[in-house]
Length: 252
Image (cartoon, rainbow, N blue to C red):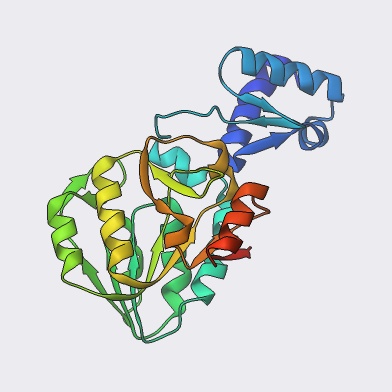
């Protein structure tokens, strides 16, 4: 395949998986490692990828990726994380699922549960779970964020403050090695803080590529999370912090 055709496909692969490696691209395209390294360097020089050891990732940014792209990003990993997350939630309990493509994947895995009361500020999750007559769904209301079906703002917070949840499943846009959990929308962050405060057990579902992203607004710390469900090993600093604050880490 000529370079002009390889480059767009490399970018699409990075959007789906979050990271591309030289070895995987060599196998996919049937070209030499030197050819792939040159492609990645040129894409990095153009600002379309960032080089990392052994491959490349999507550029770090403080501007969020579009919703449709986020749905495709690391899709297989999200499914694995969602399945493991759903296993932590028993039947016959109350659950809050917040905004995010990973929490939507969790909702799909909860379609086989029974006796759940699910509260959400995510219109997509409400639509997913409407297929299960064994699950009662409450939507918080709030300001509709048309880009992803999220409900945010003071009205959403006020609704959540009236309720208590056995479990909350939250996502995030970025993670720091020191354990900080980050997002882009300050209104969404305020809602997420309220969810955590109103929940007995907090599950954070996020793939490890979030350690390679940046976002400006702090939701909480890993110290506020009971179980962190992710796809692979954590940075050493974060792993040690989780041990110190007794946050359980599960790898899908």
